[in-house]
Length: 261
Image: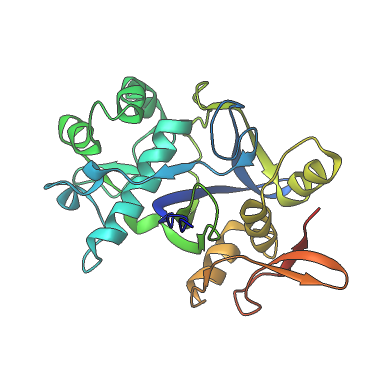
């Protein structure tokens, strides 16, 4: 009998772009195209796999706040910023020598880079050098770390980051892999999941609930910066009540299990 080959998780990064509004804390979310082979049609945070060129020679020098971090962590931070730009047109970067984020009007002028970046026709370094920009990795706050359970055909080792979204950057889905986008409160996202308006997969739902524990963006950032990150590998547990996907109770989430089926 042949033993199934173990599927190794692929490194990936996701970013929670958040803002304070009259409705409360909102996060920018996107809907994946139904033909995408992972999280089809799901309401998710922007993000994706790391790319080899995210850490090519010269990238580190074009990043702020990365002194002392490993190449693996650098790749995750660069990927989270790159993916946010590719997928929704938000660019966490500064003109070289400036302490201010790039203005929204200039981000629009850089729109032509989004498609070649997403197709891996160019690496992030090429854009940064041509436009004399540096990535604002110092603004990223590590939110959580999830690994897809064993036994699934596709597995990801995903780090989630939270950041206050630049107010003048126009967040818009790419129209390719992503077919819709919305600024949404946690309550509205959860209500949409319960009603069937949105498909929200387990990790996304849990991270929404964690985000919803705080009332403002700064409170959410302060909370995660005060925590010790617990790596989460969901496990299926069968009880008399039924089967549940469970996560560690010390991971900082208000809910630690969800019934399956």
